[in-house]
Length: 180
Image 1 (cartoon, rainbow, N blue to C red):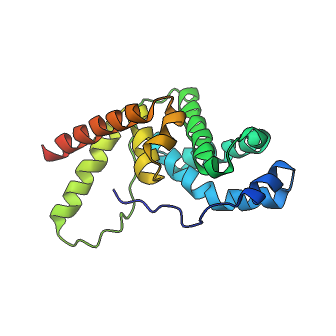
Image 2: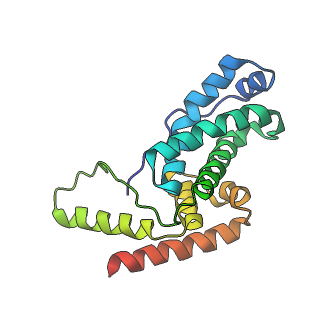
């Protein structure tokens, strides 16, 4: 599964400070830079594009309200994604959905014309669908958002080494299922 990482770049600390001070335009710049990343992570967690969009939208008022609690402006992106991921999980719980949710995959933008490549992509998507919500969240944070273990750790309440261990196990499980 191929995902595009954000190309918006980082938000300057001054923009974050302006948003904390109540500057709506500064907050709008933050939204523009990070909304798509948040939606992608939410989509992988819940498997529904509309629910993912709703979760990301629900995260923004929370972020606006709690922005002053952000200690390190350099950690804005992981902080925002963690809020959105939490909203996606809460929406799933509210809807009493099953933990295994089919994920619709449109065009994965593969240049490979060999059907065997497409077959392995389908197998990977199926294997990801069968993962528990927590593991899909981990995969989303690492491979969709591009966070490293030290950024994922506080989001999931694990140590960085715990993140690496869990990620290694999930990836090994996916490899094993795709190889079948």
